Every structure is written in C-alpha cells, then in structure tokens.
Length: 534
Image 1 (tube, helix red, strand yellow):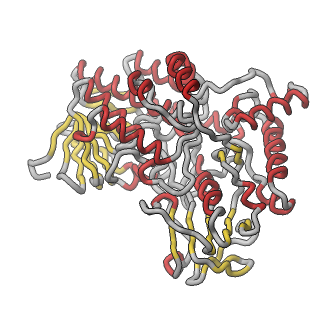
Image 2 (cartoon, one colour):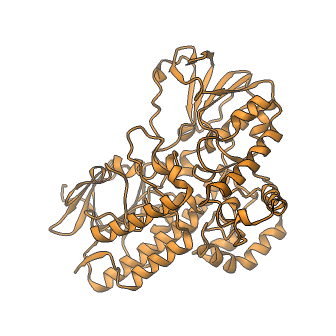
Image 3 (cartoon, one colour):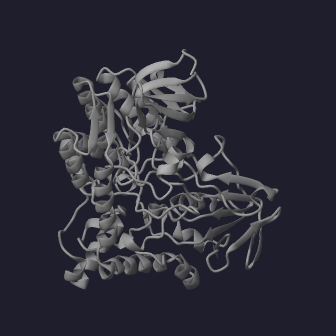
C-alpha cells in the first residue's frame, strides 16, 4: 500500500446481478461504495457467456429485480425465456437507470486481500486504478463464474478452431459445412449443440453423462401477459420469496407414491407441456426424498426422450443413468433431442469410449479418431469456490483457499469464520443454484445491507461468523443432503466435476422460504452466530 489508496466503506467485487443490487442499495443507505469488475461491462455471467442459443432457464418475468418497483414496471421482456442479449441489455439498463457505472471500475481484477487486524479493515490489491481500503467487502462474484479447467490431454495441439462456451467470441462464428464437436452435455452443451446442428456439415456431440432436458415452450410474451404480471407483481413476488424454489411453483402436498398412476401421469404430462422443469421437484413431496418416487419422474422423462428420438439406440444413450433426478441441473431446450434425428448429427458416448487426447486433426477416443474442423468445449464451472479461491484472500487465520481445502463452507452461505467483515452473496450452503437466483441474490444482498446498516448504527467495526454457528449450520445442511436423493449425487452440486475437489453438498437443500426465515431470525436476535466488535 502506498498511501494513495482509495478508501470506501464497502468494496463490492463483481458487477453482475448481485453486484449491481449491492451497489445500489448500499449507496442508497449512505455508504461510500466502489465496485470492481474484471469485465468491460456489467452483467456478470450474462456478459461472459454469449454462445449461440444461450437462454435463461428461469422465465424472464421472474428473472428480474423486485426490490425497485419502478424497474418492475418499466422493462418489457419480449420472450418467455429471455436470450442472453436481452438479459445483458436489462443489466445495462439497470446500471444506467440507477446511475451505477460511476461507482464501478471496469477491467479491474482483485488479486489479493489482507485483513488488517489493527484497524479492522481490508487492504485490497486491484489490477487497475490502484489499491483499495475498505471496512467491508462483499463478494458478489457468482456461484458459477470461474470455468473449470479443460483437463483433456493435447488441447493445445488441435490445428482447427477451438471455442469455449464460457468465453465465446463477441463476433459470430460460422460453422457452415464444418466438422464440429461439442464436448459436454450440460445446459451449455445442450443449448449450443441445438444451434450448431442447424449449420454444421457434421456435428459430433460428446456425452459422458446424459442430462435431463425438457422442452422450453419458448414464445413471445403478449402485452396482456405483461400487464397482468405488473398488476399482480407484489403478490407474485411475495409468494416467490417464501416458496421453496423462489418461483412459487404449484405443489400438491401429496406423495407421488400415494397418487394413482393415471392421476400421476396426467400431472406429469401437464408439467411437461407447461415447459417448467423445476415443477417436478416440488409437485409431489417425496420426489427428492424417496428413491421410488424419484424413479417415477425418471421413467416418465425417459419415455419422453424415447418419443423424441427416432433411433432407439441413440435414445437409450440419451436417457440419464447413474444418478437421481434433481441431483444435476435439469435443463430446458428448444429441440435438443430432435437434432439426433438429423443425418448430420451423431452422439458419441465418451463414458463407454473415453476421450484419449486431442490431436492436431481432432479428438481421439478409445473407439477411434473423430476428425474435426472445430471443437466447442462446454465443460462447466468450478462452482461456488472457483472465483473466491483464485483471489489471495488472507484473514487472521490464513487464506480462504486453505480454509476451504476440505470443502467449501459458510455460515448461512454468507460468511466464513476467520474472515471478518467479508460477506458472500449466494455462497456455499445457501439455496443459490437450486432456486431462482434473482430471488436468492435479493435475499442475501438485502440481509447484508441491513446488517451493515445496523453495524454502523451500533459502532460495530468487526463482524465475524463464529466457528460454532457455522459448524451447526453445516451439520444441518449435510443432514438434509443425507435425507434427500442428493446423498447419491455425483454432480457439480457436490464438486464432483473438478478433480481433487472435496465432496460437500454446496447448495442448501432446505428451500428458499425456510432459509429466509432462518436468516431473518439471526438478524432479529442481534445477529446470533456472529461475533461483533465495537
């Protein structure tokens, strides 16, 4: 530090939806704030991800801010499931409308943070604009913001074009007539493959683990729908905040095993036609707890895949196996399974015939060489932990990377013992990715803003989660994981997609409403579970 550091009350790292909300609300409470964003624009994941076919899997009317009623009334979404350009435009509109850009350093990356125990503040190294000193730091870096490293041997040797869905070129890519491979069949792989199939000469979709995907039923929104939403927005939003999923999707309160096969089938058909995949999680109470009930959803969705794919062998390979429904992200699509009915598309099972290496000419599997002109990697993220641990964050006990070496943990997904005055938005053991992210972001940001406002009023200069409170919260979260079908998860929800990453159930499984009530109870009790120093 040089003595020329910027000094603010709160440093917000990240200018996605969490960062923008935090900057606006903290500023409006009278805090001096600074945002730091490594990109050149706001939007977070919707800035960095721009591959063909990218859409949100939450309906656009729900995937928007609710804390500013005027924003609710003035933005017109055009489609049921918004595309990436439209969501990015919305984020830009928010930044402009709320005059947030002057608060943000763009093209600036935080490399290191040190907690000064003498003064109880953070000293932060930033790549552009000089260092920053802040009493409080809010990590609004996103649960899925750091791509997983591509760990296939020979990646650099390929002579053709290589692309990553997480870092797509800003200019369009022409795949016309080319031999293309898409590696990965999670949400990104499904969306990008559906688009590339329309123009590639030959498309090879390399699948290791099949995903569940449902038709989105995307369409233009009508003026009448938007007007009805606006008229009922307060009630809709309140119901979503206190629901399990952050969407207030319908729940019967029944168990799938107690319903007749005919009634259950009718309900499943209704949900499938509606194009809301998350409805299957809560429509019956036992789907995420009972293996037999979970299998009923699987069997129905497997049948739908077989109906959509002409070749029985290909269809069978597209049916998810080896994990319960709901323990990996359920996807939505606009014709994904149907691309395998095209003569230019093939499914390559790399679980049966693993990838050996990438060569100059293409991808070699145990079944032989696939010659290619272009490779698209849709290989996912180092969820929850990737971005925070790549910053050298040092508290009184050591680094955050060291603290999380045995598995990521945070009290209420908000704070980690040993890192005072540092708050996470939708961190580990919060509902985060198992909910409507906007609802979870707003809940966490609102809690943090209220906590800092209370701390200022009471002269609190150090605000730190205790080991005992965090331990009890982690045990509670882990118990839920054992009660639910997630006990058998092998997905990025437990870190299984990253080699060497400790297995921990990263999202909180208890639901948005119960989680909100717990956070509110903590605040109302004077922040039980936190050590406060004045």
